[in-house]
Length: 145
Image (cartoon, rainbow, N blue to C red; front, side):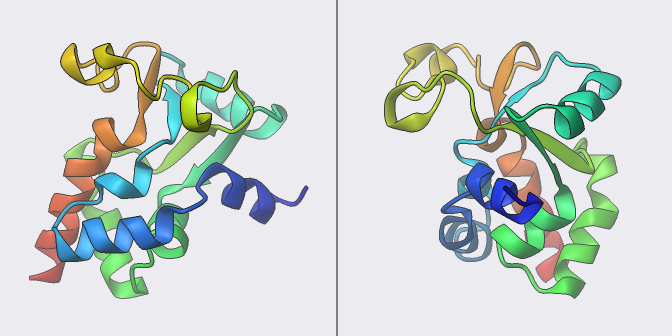
């Protein structure tokens, strides 16, 4: 499996949802809707998991913005420039071969993910949409103005 295949597997369906959410509604939430990541893992742990594991894929922010959300280069560059100040990492390590929950997502219908904020609390498994969707959407809005 090539890196492009891994990225596509990790982020399938993101382009259409991301464009609609990011550009039309002003939020990039859908772009990271079901991308699970281990928020508790260290940078070194992410580096190892993203390069040595077949269960995790390292995906640069630039790839999320341009290939999966579909932002044009100038807009993506602006978002990337502002991302660190907004607390958005320069890359993500998404789970691609974890135990699958409903609809192929680890905790798809777990009411606690939203109700108790477990999907974006910075501990254990978090979801990209809940953790970074609003911030990415806000930056897209700022950079589009």
